[in-house]
Image 1 (tube, helix red, strand yellow):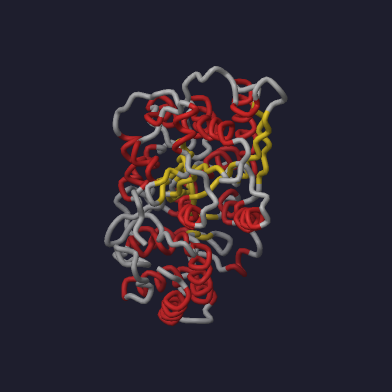
Image 2: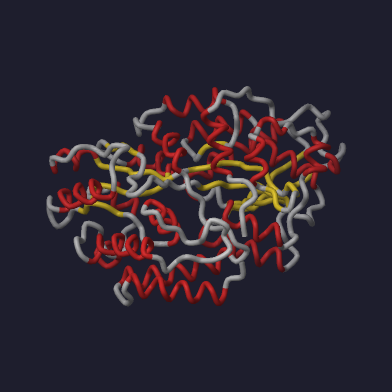
Length: 428
């Protein structure tokens, strides 16, 4: 299944090129369709974006939206990402879908194909939403079969975080954008040599990292047309061996047992970890909790550069009784200056807008100092495979990667088994 439009390219254009910001909503008279002059319409918004510490920022968006739209009330139903899609599927199957909800790019296609999403075009027109607030191609990324089902709300990328204090102690130069796996591994070994309680690197071995890391080595999980899987390839076998060897041979990365239940972010915040590959959503927490000097850089490549790109979209259930009011909420979250400013000021991912004045503020914030790496990484973004059976595909790959990580299968056998299972169970 070939993607419609690469969202990555859309947001590079939105972030790097100069463009004037157009307001996301026009004045339509202050009513919310079905609400009329009576009691406010209640819109249920199910989401994973606002889980955890960032919930206060989503609350701030709701407060501002309701101030501007007193005839609409937003009821938040926030669920952690790990449980979100299971609960969402259960609700939709039971005929109790929320009015509107989050969908990440990877799961968007399967929901669009199931026929559970509302075509937004009539409501974009009726609410006066100005689509020029969003890049035209970015908007198209949340469409399927020519139907606009969603609005892009935010994006984030993954970088190499590093502890400057540990690099200084180990006598290693700080990472640069020119680093490859070789320089990263050498630095990790020197930091590991500081003592048993220190670790050079944590780079998770799971689907969301493997699809990207193998691209750094010239491999891929599927062919370019996305018509067949290519798990069992020489490049992929070499990549997985490299990732696993950092745990099982050089041990610059701790095993699950050695982490003893500690989280990846916890390991970094304690000052015992030299490098961590994680997302820019860590900025606020690390800025608050890390007592040592740290910074970020574009992730090292090997044969080429490849970096993550995560995008979240906003959709409306086809069964909602209040589509106009739900559309107003989606338009506010996706394209208003107020919502964008809340995201930027909080360091909470980035809005998918063309307002360069808001995005410029992001670069002026301290800690990390090298925020330009966020935008530099957009030159190298790669997207995960998108299939209707996205969750099943991810589970199959993750089981094989776990077997390699734990040593119950060789990397070669793990990928061979993954290839066979994908070929037999995933329809392309």
